[in-house]
Image 1: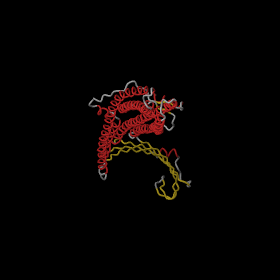
Image 2: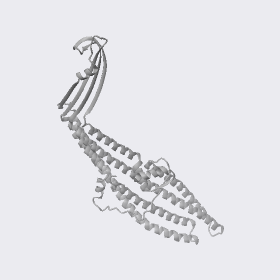
Image 3: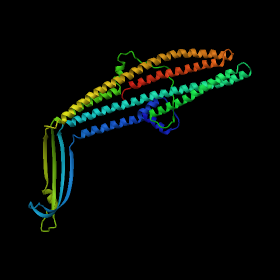
Image 4: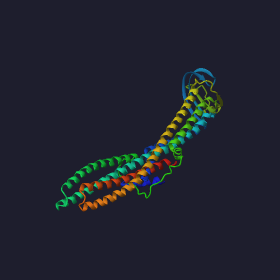
Length: 433
């Protein structure tokens, strides 16, 4: 319901909007084509379950046949072959039922396992989409922060040039200071153009991760008072996270389905018991011979009625080793699925441990940069006072100022990195919806 309201609002407000990370994740997990495809597959599995159950029901057919015969044929009145032209109408109703076929019951169980697998695949698709959104979201935020830092540096240098030019006019500064500042301004402007391109590409990638084709959304970071902490000291941290991951649950469900397929193929060795019931009647009339008396339709309909009841037991004896080979193939599929499980475990272990290492590194780096940022800020304040008093040249002040702005960006980038790894862990820790 929450996602529906969110999408409903989007439809009525197509203008520029501002989305935070959670809004991006909510939208992507409900609207990405991969998610929609996985949802359709679950519905298909529901139909397959219904179809498997429907096999247990009898099949009923009815037919009406109308034909003409010209030439030599059997006279229905005396059962003799004569040269006759006849009209023949037949009415048939038949019901067939498999009283026992173990394969049908195994098909129901397999269909349910396939639906369970599809449900896990849906969650797996949601996780993959979310992980991609988180990574592209923070790449965009970092590129945008870097562009802001460069813009601040450029604006500050432009003001510094104006101020220095006035100081040159009154003779308190040498003209070389202006040349030094302008030379560095050109370098920063070149970096700004590259940074703008990186920001634009990052936003395109983020929109693509969300499967949105129109650039009508601005993506913003919400302020967080404190960074999250994660209990990595738990010895079962990686194992617990892996076992509830949908990729792991998907491969386990696939193994169960493959094992059930072995039983399904083996069922071809078992006998089947079938039954059928049929009812029929006919109407026959000789054409072109008035001397032949034909009973009325209603009389023939009643007189010619026939019913039959059939029971049959089919016992497989020899099937050219087809069932044996199919069983062996099904067993090999189980072995392959177990190898898939090992691959999934290896990949998940690598991903979880990588996120863990990056989280701890980003957290440590952030705390170091916090202290460095305060030192750079104090250095800038003192240098600004010296520059105003004429005790520092323009180029040195430019270096100090840029170091402070760079430290500011590094702190923001490091904080974003910690938050990013936290959000990635949240996605991996999320249970099935």
